[in-house]
Image (cartoon, rainbow, N blue to C red; front, side, top):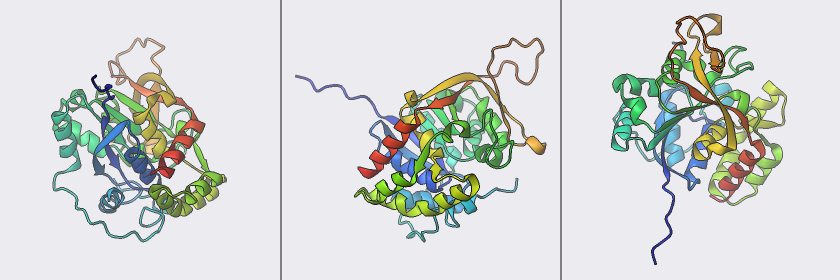
Length: 305
């Protein structure tokens, strides 16, 4: 009697700027049987790229805006992490993305947790990248609400709005998870206590580095908890049915007071004029999320690590 067929694990590459909630998302991916992490690429955002690379290795084993006031000076909650034993490969992140898209055409999902520079460069290197990549899941944007850098812009898009516009309009299968959705997903003090008292190796680590993140959210947002930005976006790659989506064209303002603003055209009106919006590929933008389920699954998977 033949063995039961096992569903193929989704190959993912995580483009990241670790980052406390990036660390949670990376650990979540490692503990998710639905996906197989075939690489980590790094970009500036929460920390500079060199430190992001160091942090990514540690976790595995325009003027830049660096959010060390949110994540700590080391990006991981000021925990003075042990230097990693591994080394980054010589190949650039964009070249790595292109190579893997060619090696596994239609099978690789890129999860973009920082500014979209590396993905835009991959498109520039290989104009067929958008056809070869299976899917791009993006944490970014603020749709119908204020941003988190300023009222107009969300941090990842603000970090490289030209790259974001290039990626949004490249024609790939794209899911965008903005802070309008991730602000619905809150890890509470009780969830943190649950992690701290568990025996999971990732749970214990995360509970230690979250102190700075909780302090920031209490001061900036006056909430007793933290927004789960990156883990929520990761769940869009792991189990997209946890969210609902609207489909339409997204463009990004690249300069001025609205630099980094993401604008969504729901395509319900047929415009008469030919403009910079005309004939652009659509993307799927998350609009609702099963927040309780996302938090429960994240905590459970970290506890069982």
